[in-house]
Every structure is written in structure tokens, then in C-alpha cells.
Length: 163
Image (cartoon, rainbow, N blue to C red; front, side, top):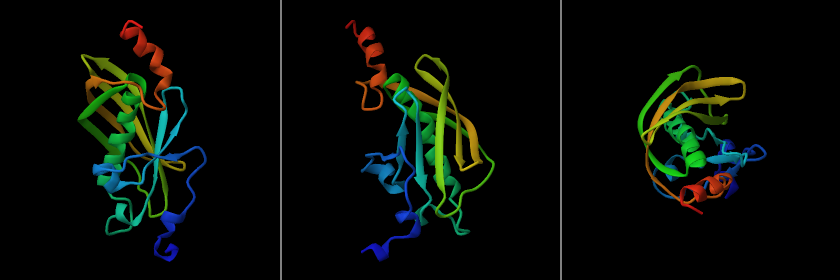
């Protein structure tokens, strides 16, 4: 029933965002998460702060923001390199908070790569407020075929495979 939904769950999602199909595991527990994909190897992830994201003060829990930063910043490796990856290190500076119902966005920028270790600079924000800045270090595990949104790099993968 619609009266069982919170205000955050019924709030509009910004134009250009579509829900990520992360329907199992940890992504399912902290979702729903959304992506705005430019098709140019960059994407912005987003989520609406719902009740299950909050701490006792009604703010978005710092653990949720860090988990989101991990996914939003690491996403650039998937988009630009078509690699599966794991997080080695995540360094975050908390600058502001988000409240129940706020729309939170995040994006990473690939700034270094050596021996399948990728360094990403990232930012998480809500409206005009920066919530977190930081750096992530991610280990590429293996290349994979590009997924939707990563197709701009299909030609690069074909060159690597000799095609």
C-alpha cells in the first residue's frame, strides 16, 4: 500500500537517473541506488536518503556515505576500463551531512593507474553541499566485456583482443 511508503521513497528521482539493477548482496541492502550515465565513460551515482540509511539523529549514517563513496568512486574503473575490481583503500574527509529525504550524488575521477592498481579522486554531494571528498585505491581483478554504459570503450577492448 502506498501509505506504507516513506516520503523519501515516494520522492521524485532527478531526470536522467535510472535505478541500478543491484538486486542481490550488499547493494540490495543499502539501495535503491541510481545512475546517470553520460555514455562518455563517466557516470554519477545517486540515492535518496531513506529511513534505513539514517543514524539516531536522522542524518545519513557515515557508514552509508562511505559505502556509497566506495561504489560511486570505483564505478569509473568499470566504465573506463571494463575491469572487475576490489577496494584496497578508501580515504574520506567528511565535510557535511545529509538528512532524511536528501538526494545524494557521487562521482569519481581516475587519476592514476599502475600494475592494475587504480587511484581515484572522488566527491559526494547533496545539492550545493559537498559531503565527502577523498581518494580510493582499487585493484583491478580481471578484464570483462563492456556492459551497458561502457560501450564507448568497446573499440578499445577490441584493439586489445586484436579485433
